[in-house]
Length: 114
Image (tube, rainbow, N blue to C red; front, side, top):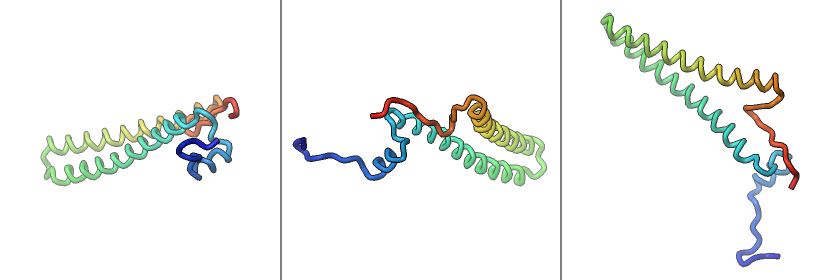
């Protein structure tokens, strides 16, 4: 039956996604969250590069002042430590996925077939 506004069809990309078997009911939120975590990791990497550049500039412009040199080194150290934490989160997620069989970074949702 065609309603008042006609027949509404899903966009072609959604239909292709559903034909691949990944478009099961309720999977959109999980995939969205997975992509959101990956985006956060990418933004963290870009921020790391920005922080390292600014810390390097601060170190070069310190002109031997111990206070400014220490401040620049602290910024470099904290930036690298933050990136290690971000990378560790992805590594731990991969290891947990390997051990448990649950792919955290690329989840598959199982449920009733529509």
